Image 1: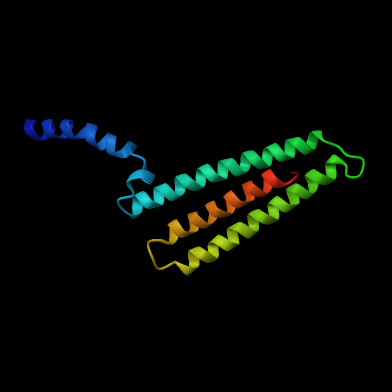
Image 2: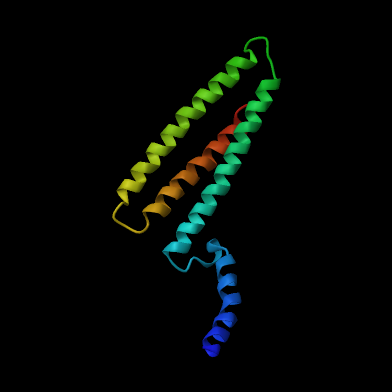
Length: 128
């Protein structure tokens, strides 16, 4: 009993170290590949949301004689809602295409990430 407990205590640091490894560095199996895809999506989506909020804030403060602030922000919000629906449906199609395989989540999250990255670029170029 003591030997098995001692062995368990020796393994605990290794288990916790393995759990903290970056799945995007290791990617040894499908679980880690899924975790990496999720991490990349979360980061890309956070950047997208920051860009969107910054753009809304900018136009909430900016007014022109031809186009009032309300119209710009109204159209941006309407466009973003439509884009979210488009992205979701486009990536669901990718998921369905890969539905029988273990890569389906990775393909779906990759699609979502690519769309988020492109939309972030669109926001940065919006008024340049």
